[in-house]
Image (cartoon, rainbow, N blue to C red; front, side, top):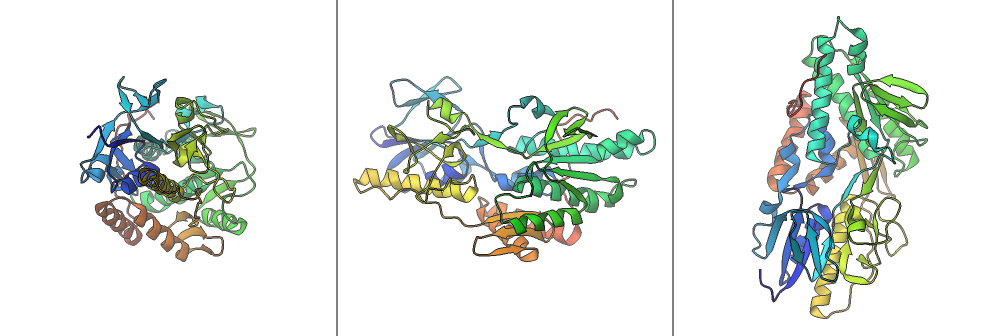
Length: 423
């Protein structure tokens, strides 16, 4: 690294951070990419790892290998904890500090339990590979325990075969559909005493319809598709309690061994680290050029930022939006270096919303065009393959999907890193 070059520090190796790094790679700047994990993760497919459709390595790639061809990019396995007062430096969890001329913070989001963090141990969400493998182990162990208790303890068997997903957005809908396919079509071929009639899958949504971000008719279509898979969809229902033995939905108690949280997210702690104004979800409020007020050298992007684009609309926390923000920030930095006029305020280009419910079942909302069924499923599959980082991952995931489509076989049904509970 040359101290005479401009030092750009990017915190976060997700879609937003990597998009900024890729665009800045052609500039004469030194880039330091900081992330607490050593891999870039394609979060939209985490639910498929959690339901044994894909293996963790299929949707992740080492950050160092992604940027290895550019000698001016340095990668640090560390975590930002704040700014050093009075200096253009960030403090790191290891105790070190790192100087910057320009700082880009893109540290993503985490689960939000709406003030009920005590539910977290009993209702994990899916944000990391560890989350996904933990949920995969819980689902598969529940099936194993149900097989073990087929005669001795019928009530316990019913608990193990009851799966509750909380949240009716894209993550919840996709998770519920994937669990239905796993338990009713794939695993039933291997277990001798589990049939589709034994399994109970419940999707709980506090709103009056699924997929609130989609057109209303597509939410209704998703509901019908889930119900055709045997999922019980409960609308206008609110979770009031979760513990080790089950979940309270309103005043009703459901005994279950598996609860999965897909109901809410909040930003990382970046707003607090930066002493910045934040919205209710903890996202740092940024200006039209995605910088903090009074700090033109600090950009905040992706799920970490509350962005209102040039049309006055709040930008959604989606992968395409994060990539567009990363690309835009790199353009702003490049323009500053050349002494050129700054680009116009950030404008989000909506490329459509997609959600899959299962085999040949999906919905797609492009505003001017709405699709459901096979065509939407084909579009969903193509788009997700395109956004995966790396040719190898695209080939592996595509081959896995084709194999699963032809055989119904989910080859990643491994229970790892989880101690089998007593029956």
